[in-house]
Amino acid sequence: DKTRRKPGTSHHQKNKHKKMSGILSLFGMESVGEDEQLFLEHMTTTEVINGPQVVWLPPFRKRADKRKAISLGPLEYCCVRNTMSGEQRIERGPQLLFLKAHDHADVVEKVISLKKNEFIRFLDKRTGKVRVEKGEQGQVVPTAYETFLDEATATATGRPTGIGPPIRQAIDLKCNEYVKIEDKSTGNIRVERGEQLVFLGGFEELVGPKQQAVDIDVEHAVLLRNKRTGQQSLITEAQKFFPSSDEEILEVRDLIKLAEYEGCIVRGEDGQDQFFFGSNADQRCFFLPPHSHMVELMWSRGRRRERRDLVLTKVDLRPMYMSFEFNCRTTDNVELVLEGSFFWEIVDLKAMMRFTSDTSGDVCNHARSKFIERVSKVTLQQFMNGFNAIAEKVHKDDDTFYTQRGVLIHSLEVTGYRCAEASTAQILEQIIQETTNRMNKLQQQESANEVGLQQMKGEIEQEHAKGDLLAARIANSEKTAKMEGIAEGERLTSFLATTAAQIPDVQSRLELWKVLRKRDALEAVSGANSHFYYTPADANLTIEARQ
Image (cartoon, rainbow, N blue to C red; front, side):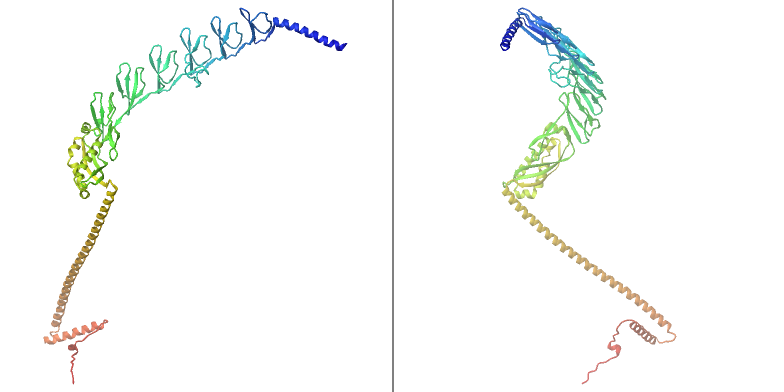
């Protein structure tokens, strides 16, 4: 029996549950928590039930939705819009926000905290008024109808618009900085100088970035334009210069300094040229006046003056060298490439400006035409023998061209030449080699002749010296013999006078003198390593031939 009742009891319970489910499905029941809301959409109206409570749902309804209430922290806020009336309101935390029947909440935003050097601007869409909030403060929240004025700008942290509120940095100005600010509502411009922290007003915007004040001293001046009058002025008084709201700095001009040998040209507002020279004390240093500029000279450069891109604002008036190279052809149809140099200077800057705009190009081109003209009238051999004479005639016979342009040519020299064609160059090289060899041989012969001539001159001088030596010796011998004879005569006279009393006979005294002289000779011979030779007369020898 028990096994039969269990199935019956289960069937009875199932029927009971079915009846309860039908009743619950007809009425419904919802439990709403403390942080929840139940939105009941009836046939014609909408009802909101805030928790906590248990709610029996009516049988006739369109929809029943349970939603979480919005939790706003102390640093959060939310904009709520009523979809029926269109009204908006701001709900600030901390609170648990329960929306009304037709409310729609936007994204929860963080309140804005401003540092001391930050500010933010709000635009009221209903009135068009701009509200500026400056630091240092927190809990800054826009009203229901306000939006960020600087929506299109980046934020202070560098984040793009949409990630955070467009907080702007105040402008921190140092003692030598300034900034121009324009009021877009009136068009007025004001200048703020440092040191200070500048906050923009509701309709103000920066006119360019921060600027540095200009230090005006002995080497710097400021060229200004007044935007109201359009006039330019040059400020040279020493100061730290800040322009006014109507002034625009066109240029910071440096002091132009000219060396003793330099000159320059300044073109004024009337189109007239003024010439300044460093040799004049009152023109050595100056500032360019308003509406004036330095005249730039465009000269040619390169050995063939093929590029006209040398820009000069100061002209060197010292003598200088300038090299050149060009082709010409002799009368025997040999094309040569000439290389040379000018030694020249500018002596009249005004005349140069009046007649030419390319001084170096004109000088070289004119010399080239004159060279071509004169070289075409001579053969290669004649050119090789007299190219320096041709170069001298080129600039001395045509001084008018250079003088008219204020140029003085001191010298024009051909430093080298070569044939343009390779075959002709080989022949010319052979000719030059033969000429060089001949000159070397002539030089060697001249050297040998000069050596021989010097040798002959030396021998002649040597013989003259020998003759002088012999003449001197003979004169000395004569003088010695004369002195010895005088001494011998004195001795003989003294001997004869001394022995006159003892030996009255003069002849006997002479014989005695001779014996004494022989004795002196024998003593001289015996006292030295000498040989004594006797003549037959001295030995009293005779030779007899006997048969």
